[in-house]
Amino acid sequence: FRPPTYDLRKIPSSRKMMLIYGAKDGLADPMDVASMLSLLPDSDSYPIKFVPQYAHMDFVLGTNADEMIYGHIIEFLTI
Image 1 (cartoon, helix red, strand yellow):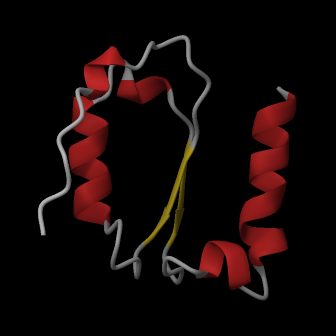
Image 2: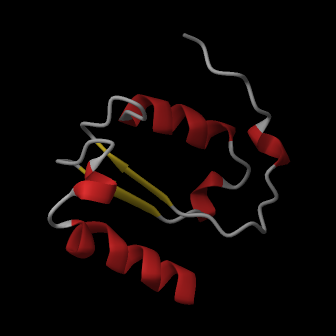
């Protein structure tokens, strides 16, 4: 399966965005995230949270997601 190609350069650098990903995510593994970051304009300006023990559904169903993820999202959105 090959997903459609999107021109990520069209995302305005003024768009507020945070990237959160896990090492065990089979749908967005670290190599995929690195590839995507290389295509984003001003990719150094985006906050990134890497959670080594997280897989795709852990962001929603993880028993410690409130500690590992949600606080970072709330802080990011209130800046």
